[in-house]
Structures are given as structure tokens and as C-alpha cells.
Image (tube, rainbow, N blue to C red; front, top):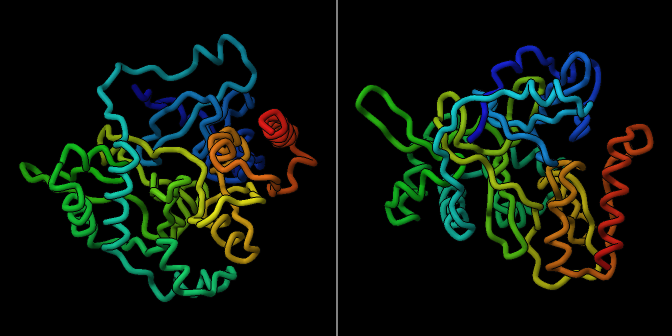
Length: 312
């Protein structure tokens, strides 16, 4: 069950409140209550309550003051059946087909060059593509074909959903137009797709994960959350931790140090399975310097370092 945050209108965007999200520490897209007792983070779980934000996608409601009243204010709606995302191999087949059906625009390629990712072969190998506004049904059809025509399996791939017009229904792909960025696990499988929007979304947000939930998409699965691991050939001696899959890819390319990424500092627990799997000799933590002024970020950073030392 995913409750709908029917009362989120009483919360305000963090940029309007002139603050940062207390969960992911970003200055946009997320919402906060005027009394700062609750926040809805649109990026990071971190133990929050999953809520349906309609056309905005999914967010996580966090009670910040721990009060009983705040807990009782959590939105409640009747339970609805909700499919779980497909298994990793199925997701990888579908997402690989989606990327294979798309190209990368010259504008996006030049933007990647500006970030320092200048090797076009590397850009293409990463799987960076342009998600256009039109032609989504054709792209979804490629995913369906890769799954052997199994519509039930396709509808368990976050981002794919059926669009309806009267008695007609067809499979299509969600997400705003923009740069499409695959998120991979340690085996190189694509578990979700992130879009860097060409035009900022609500609250000025640029990044969003493809999802099959929302007012126009029904009650399909949300994105699979995990740390992004760029493709690599050998077990790394040194591993760097940061935020955002695109930043991880650029950092890995420029420095030669394998850099993995979580959606935000508050999602630091996503790093732990990767660290357990790769077992690097050294771990570098490369987050923004906000921990010096933001107590929540400082707490998350301390917890992450403590977990790394405990596992060493």
C-alpha cells in the first residue's frame, strides 16, 4: 500500500521555505511543514513512509519531531494491490532494450563533454541516452519484445505503464524529456533509470527516477533503490563514495578511481552491500562540505564512517 499524501498541500517546497531538505540536504523538489515537524523527501527513503505524490511521483514522509500528533497526521488511504518490481535480470533486459532503442542527442553529448566526459565511446558504453518527448510507445515496444512479449513482466518494470484512451490501451514509457542515466549494480545490471530533465520540474528539481506510479500511470512499481556502480573489470583497491550516478561516472572516468553513488547522503546504507561485495582496501568519502554546517548531514556522514570502520 502506498498512501496518497492528500494533505501535502499544507507543506511547502523547501526552496520557498528558504531551507534545505533535512533528509537529502538538497535545496529543491522536497517539501517541509511550516513548523518543520515533517518533511517529504522526493529522493531518499532513510526509513521514511512511502507516499504517492500524484504527478510528482513518490516521496518519503519523515516525522522530524517524533510527536504522536505528527505520526497521526500521516496520510491514510485504503490499501490497493501494488506489484513488486521485476527481478534484477528482467529489469536489466528491459532497460537495456530501452537504451538500445534510443540515441544521444548532440546537445546532451556536448553537455557531457563539458563535464569532462570526453570519450564518446565511453559515453555510449555507459548507456547515456536522450529520452525524447515523443516516440515512447516504440521504445516501450522494444522492452516488451526483449521480455518475450510478457506484458505482465513489462508492467513490473518501473517506468513502463499502460496508457488508455477509451477502449484502447498501449504500453508506453514515463519520465520527463532529458538525459537518461542507467543505475547499475556490482554485476553491471541496470536496476533503474534516472532522468536529468531538460526543463526543471516542480521546485526546480532536475533529477528523477523513472516510476510507474502517479495520477496518469496507475499503481505500478516505484524505482528500485540501490547504489550505482560504474562498470569495472577488476576488484578495486580504492573505492570512492559520492552522490548521483552521473557524478560517479564522470569521477570514475576523470580520476580512474571507481566511484559509486547513492541518491543522497541520507541513503548511505545503500553503500554497505556494495562495500561487502567489493571489499576495497581503502574507502574515500566524497560528499559535499555541508556536513560542516548541517547537523543532519554531519550525523549521516558519521554513521557512514562508523559503518565502514565496523565492517573493516
